[in-house]
Image (cartoon, rainbow, N blue to C red; front, side):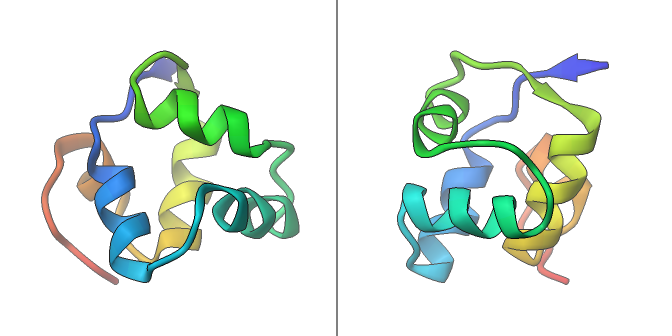
Length: 76
């Protein structure tokens, strides 16, 4: 499954006040092979995101998968 996340991942990233590079670093520590450029493309809607990446993004950002997919503010 592939999808494009709405800009909600940027919302949660900015709420945490972390850079795209720091988010990429946190995702790498969580076991996801992703870099800052991929984060930028995701936030611009130019890169597809797999279901595993969405789950990992939600975990690192401290929000629900539904929040990322549907843009609702639901922090864990």
